[in-house]
Length: 324
View 1 (cartoon, rainbow, N blue to C red):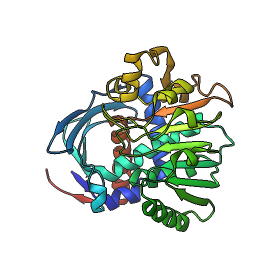
View 2: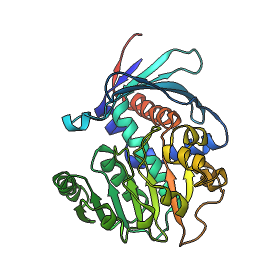
View 3: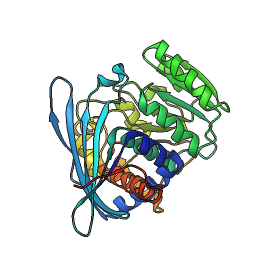
């Protein structure tokens, strides 16, 4: 079995390659060539949880499991909020063939999925990006958005002004071609944006439908469990709703669950999985529509990304081979 570290994943899964992998993966999911049980979550004290996500894919052919600790207090310690491992198995004899760090893999594949959706749904001429959130996902979403659109203006919104300022200072050094600004007012930050990414740990809405403008594209990413939501009902009413995987959307997206129960939206308002759009199905109706990609994250993304990392690791002899 090959063991791969955080540093290995960082080197072997650049954003452009991750976006290509996730594009293929979401097509595979939407044509039904995957087995994806809903994730199992176990409380492990306080707000901390352990998630278990298993599955199998036909393209790329792989199966495995992600074991991940969800510790929302970790970023304050300088650690990822997602820590754990992805384990891949051999499809011919069933043996475990690889184990790799799950934290960075999760962050990259999540942002890559938003990149895939943005490339499919955002207006081609979109150049102005707003990111609500200043954590790990904000960093990777910035890279993903710059990979799929010619972004020249970036505004970062954070609850704490000093964190937003620090994020922007670092981003300027990485992406000197874009103009950066920051603030704490989400409403002001959304004004004039072409693309908005919400990547927060908020349990209550940080983006309101009354703030939205025609033609925007939204990536709603941060609230991944029932009971937490980043958007209000007005966002749902005003948007064309796309998503990664219908079963997880209906089971885990709080605003969708509540909206369907209250009659704010109906299942007919849930347009399609992004994989169906990639395969040629209906996407953005027109330039004035507001498109929304609701990302829950699915293990298919982890498995495909891990398989890509393993293939590169074997080709470059990276990681540590151990008897198992």
